[in-house]
Image 1 (tube, helix red, strand yellow):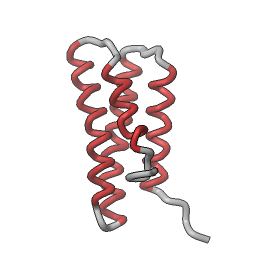
Image 2 (image 1 turned 60 degrees about the vertical axis):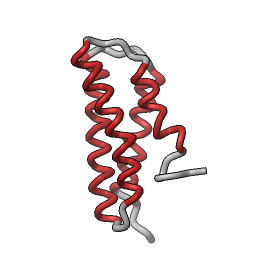
Image 3 (image 1 turned 90 degrees about the vertical axis):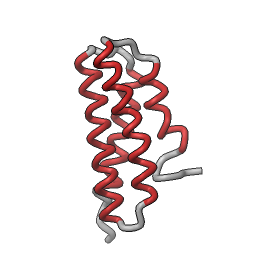
Image 4 (image 1 turned 120 degrees about the vertical axis):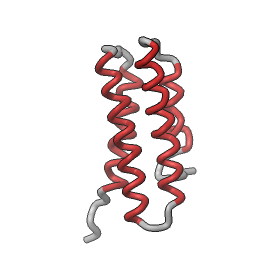
Length: 103
């Protein structure tokens, strides 16, 4: 079943991956906060009734995914699964923010 435009497991998968990553304390805390923000903003966006408001909240979630990816770069993360998952979530959010025009 799909909820919020994502399979429920997908919404939490990035956070679960991030929980296992070891990094300097300040970067680890930032990584956890950003990944929490992704999950919470996706849920909040799904609860909005207007498409414009949904897109605004999903854009915030996308910004948090980009923050996660930036920390991955800073720590030279060598976890292809986490990197691919972040890329996939970013792509899904982009499509929610910028839907394809109807023919």
